[in-house]
Image (cartoon, rainbow, N blue to C red; front, side, top):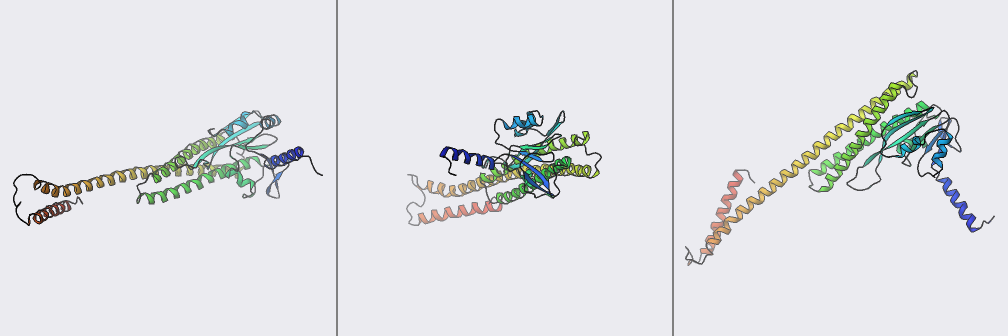
Length: 337
């Protein structure tokens, strides 16, 4: 059936909007996550921008959530925390992602929050970053034994792979720092220093996020916010996650200290090389000054020795060379060259 032009355009827009819909539903079937058509009691609802003006208020009303539970995690500067409102629980945890700004002065990685909302009817995640690297592991079925019906375990798996993501990014930053450090010994350009500053900014973001995540997890453990105290396996997993988070924080602090030491050492090397260059130029100037002084004396308009001799010019050249070589030998003896 052939549609009129306006109806055909509306049909294409509807298909395009549906294919790029930012509200996704996932359920566990045969041990794997599969996308579902609608929300159910054991589904995972994943939200990413852009949203229409009705979608977030509609979800908040449907699941009896404060609208802040959905809007706060979209703020890139939101701190890690948890909150309870009646039967709804919110957990905000910060995770590392690649920065979208491709300049030398900006950080390589930034941290963005993931909002995890637990209600009696649904498990909801919301983030401001499409294709978030942590949540994408779940969506792409790269993890085994993931079931949204087991909500506490699902949250722990997000915590676990958030820590793994931090550790992976820290190792990449350290490798990049080592490569730049090798280039610094043979270069005095500002490009390498700008790259080190980008790494330093990333490490600052990581330290702040890991500190916040550690405090969050300790509070969740102390308050048993997830209700897992009587489940030995999940409790042990949570303790391991806290230990790994502390390890990532320690690594970030160590790499920051090494980076600061590297930048201070490089600044000292540049200053020392500049001093050596200026010293050598000064010595060369002194050596070249001797012939200039000698020839200046014999350039005066007064009676001078040897002015009538035919070999006077060669004698002056020889005298200048002897004095210059003597001064050079003296500077070599003093190890100034």
